[in-house]
Amino acid sequence: MEKPLPPKGNSSRVLILCQLFYPELVSTGQTLTELCEVLIDLGIDIEVVCGPPTILDGRTKVPRYLEYKGIKIKRVWGTRFPKLTFIGKFINQVTYALSVFFHLIFDFSKRPILVVTNPPFLGAICAMLRVFGGKSYIYLVFDVYPDTAIKLGVLREKGIIAKLWDWWNRIILKHASAVIVLGRCMKEVIVSKGKGTNSLSDKIHLIHVWSDDRLIQPVERKENPYIKKWNLEGKFVVIYSGNMGRFHDMETIMEAAKELKENKYILFLFIGEGYKKKWMEEYVNKWKLTNCQFHTYADRKDLGISLACAHVGLVSLTAGQEGLSVPSKTFGILAAGVPVIGIMSQTTEIALIIEENNSGIVVEPGDVKGLVNTILKLYTDRDLREKMGQNGRTAIDKKYNLKAAAMKYKHIIESLQYG
Image (cartoon, rainbow, N blue to C red; front, side, top):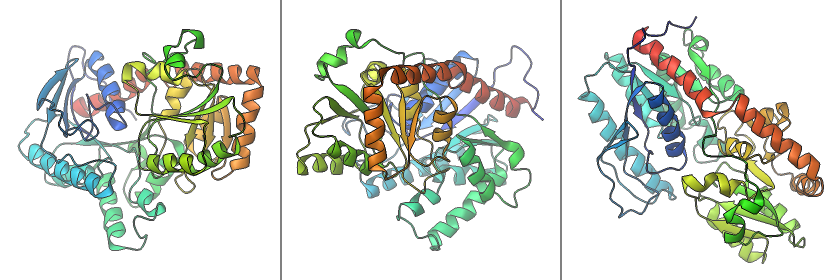
């Protein structure tokens, strides 16, 4: 049973812990910034404790204290090694988590915490302090650890680190006041991890990732400045926009690009950064592919028009990552009115959303022929493309918009504050 909302006129407060935040508008930084912008408008008092930017130029100075659209932002100390190297990313996460620990020890407010899984140490810190009378916390699961690392071969399933991590997960889930997951498959994984934890199912909330539909809208190609800027006139554009990380199936996409290299009208447009980007650029050079373009992340204000350059959008997840991660880039593509090709298992949340809303086509990971045929199908069938694109935008308007998600977060925060 849901707890009652607070009396009118009272403002709920929340402390948000996330390493990336405004002005670092990539990955969880953009997702949490968008959420906070709307929560502020809905009357939630917010302070964010984040780390120094790690993707922006390492020499760029960002104020330690900043107020942005009513959001109070505090940047604690942390290292700024390049994020794309494993050791650099790990050290950045550890130093940020240590700073958060000391911040929480001296924060005597009663407001609840919203803590994310990235970096994965944050939840453990909140759980440990909660055992000793610390703040209640909402655990927002973006990625499931250590499972993701195990599937990628970074950790051994029977190793001591993985076992300790799973033990900590049970502690985190046990002491969390609420747990937020991004999909049905993820909910199943989390419930299985919390076996033995009383009433875990009762405190799990499924809230989909959203698109910032305030900024991302369908744009006519003739009115899109990026078509000329990137020399896309006369091209059928297949876009991949976002992180090109370890658990994204970029290999199938690049092999499909190679298979389609003789078609001078089809262009693969890659926007973003990530662990696999360097390999992808080397692949293009090795096979002398002229049908691929690479660009860094688009500015937030330009994200909508960059996505609207596309006739088709790609979203991928490697086999074995079902329920462990939910690619949020999907919702931006849908908001732009572009059909989605999901390269992932049929059981993933994104695959289910694509099928349920008839907003694209799902192809299994590693199925290069299937991906090539799907691209060609949408290339030749304009009516199907347009219908799927319209269906995707309708799904955003009705179900996956930012305000709808923010209202659910608001209710959880208020229930903890006043329940």
